Image 1 (cartoon, rainbow, N blue to C red):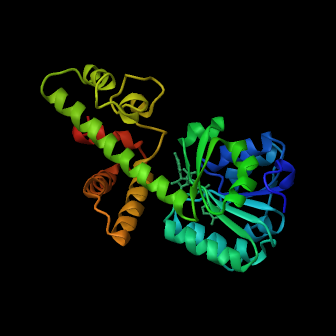
Image 2: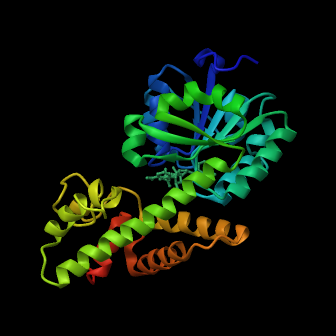
Image 3: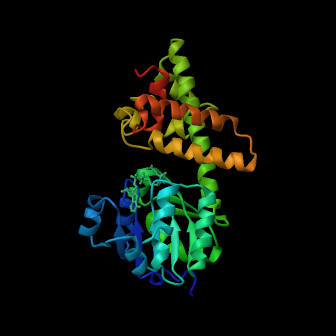
Length: 305
Ligand code: NAD
């Protein structure tokens, strides 16, 4: 097999899971001229991709049959496991030497088990979760955190670079997920921290917008204060200025915090703030914030105002 020989290596690409992220990622693959077969259990999720030249498969196994490389972008562990190992799953028809890349955010342990099952079929597996959100997916500026063989990572690069601007090889299978979970745990903690600090300032009589701007030129500065501030009216295009719609939902960050806590328990790592962050986000989900951007923790701390 030729390594890193450019996109001719993959004349046929498959994509499964055309939701908020996957739809744009699939569109960017098409824009780069790859032949693409897609599947989603929700038929309407595929409409625009088919109109743009993609071919709809009737099921997952058909995608595997027709593709040298398959990318999955599904919600969580169970969806990915079923998609691979189910009765008509990817592994039921995967081509020998095919490359399967899972870009969903899931448990590293599940990625490692999927790799073992994939190898049994003579194919290769990479975990390749992403950061950059729906905007990064739309603009093809995602960062891919890749776990698996270096050779496979090189082989995947032309297709990953069609969807993102950075591909980082993190180590063996599962290490992409480890990178993703650790980053998102920190992100959740920092978002709660910014929201808490700004809300306290407000309660003490300081304008929250002024406080947010002070943070941005002080030592508390971070992505959550600068790029996606939880205070409405600072940046027009971010979720907080749009009733916390769009962006990265509270239910997705809760899922990632749960995965981080499970991994921390397995490895005996102390993650006190990660654990509290998970409880905070689970709490606000119970209060109906599940579909809102995770910066809505600020709204919750203010008593829904
Ligand atoms: P989503 O729910 O919008 O999309 C998932 C898609 O998978 C849906 O279209 C659904 O119909 C489809 N699907 C579910 N089960 C299926 C199956 N068995 N076969 C085929 N299709 C199936 O989710 P999303 O926001 O696109 O996120 C996908 C993954 O990416 C998640 O693991 C998430 O944590 C991760 N992620 C999301 C973001 C974000 O900002 N949304 C950012 C980075 C990573």
